[in-house]
Image 1 (cartoon, helix red, strand yellow):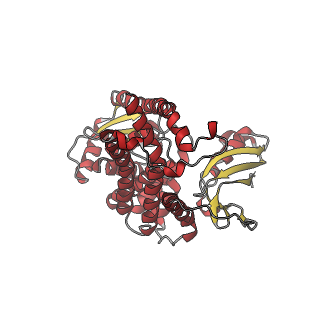
Image 2 (tube, one colour; image 1 turned 45 degrees about the vertical axis):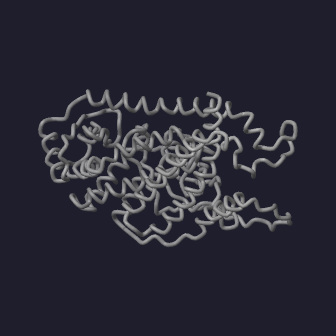
Image 3 (tube, helix red, strand yellow; image 1 turned 30 degrees about the horizontal axis):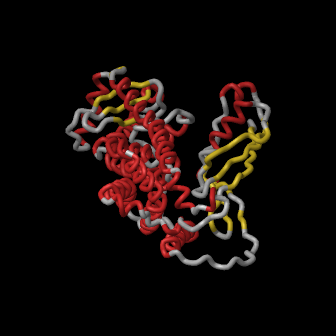
Length: 419
């Protein structure tokens, strides 16, 4: 058992560089395919995520088949003595002495994340036993499914606790429709959203998404896994949009997504649902498709990481340090064309409440907001939160240091006025 734990520990540690290498190759491939069909980028991202799963498994099998060779671990770069470690031991020796702790911590975190998978399956099971759709709606969706070439029976359930349609199940597909959409959205726009979900059913996207959840659960500690999984979800939505647009038209689907954006503010996302992607970016893609220009600066971090990995494997001697020039830093800027104007809260609108709220947004290197807070209130909590939630969906030009995107806090001021 101790040998198994030791080899598993080394497998987990080696995946740090293995996953980074896979992400570098996938990142360069996605840049090259930026103007190709989403199916090509989806296939590449799926292949990269599959490689992230298969490489550690193969590595562990090889290690268990030749435990003696595996004991002399090849991570010679880590074996150099490092100051500050107990007894002057190198990082390799320190890691070897803590393999059991590493594996135990990994197992605990993976078990905790597996609860998300179990909770999702439980929630879907309950939803499948929920309120059934009317005979007319069920028959209409069955007819649409036949137009998509879907031979399986698509069950339809009405759910109160979700804000957008959700597809679940792969052998016996289940379509969950929010009750609010049935009463608050025109029938032709609801049909467009249903067509999008039927695109997921046709492609068995739920099954792929289930495998993504397993990868995220087992390899949770590596950012490359989460990034690849996120790209898969984005491209999957684009493919389903194209399938739906072929049946109902791009304009109708874009209008449906726009209406959905207005009512979908803050709802918990089901981990097992075959959905994802930003609604506004999907709308812009449908309405104004454009060729993606080459962003060579965005590839600098990927190229830098590739060079670092190659240098580490070759065990290049450290270069002499020199005085570095002062970094050239550019602040992040909001892309206002990607923003949706916040909707005035009804109560504040009736009461004639106005004010100015100052907020701070933490913009990630991809231009998306990952954290936000109110810096100075307008005097109304409702106005503050409405503005913060709406502007947090905007895309930003990320801050950069010497041309490399970096995280940065951006101050934004929004004025609520009735004029």
